[in-house]
Length: 122
Image (cartoon, rainbow, N blue to C red):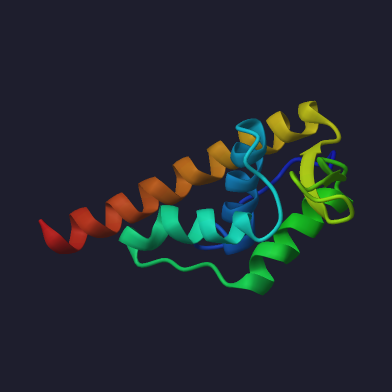
């Protein structure tokens, strides 16, 4: 996690994109269980993007392995035994660093796409 991110190819990888939104959702205390998948699909439906279950959970597990997020189990409201797994920051400084590094990559991708649009559609 400590090394500097370099350009990873033509465009941003799907998992990096998903991790960025998972960090955002954690900042808003919205990250728990299957609700995560529903929220991501809802937010990007209008753009024709529907993240799949496996990529979302692989991204989530990478954030845990990188020490950015951790799992916290809480009792479900109104239930004595049922627990819900929430995700919270393990290290918020690592999360901010990841977002900063990804901003550079997103800017590069935006310029690349802008060039393609300008060169081919103006």
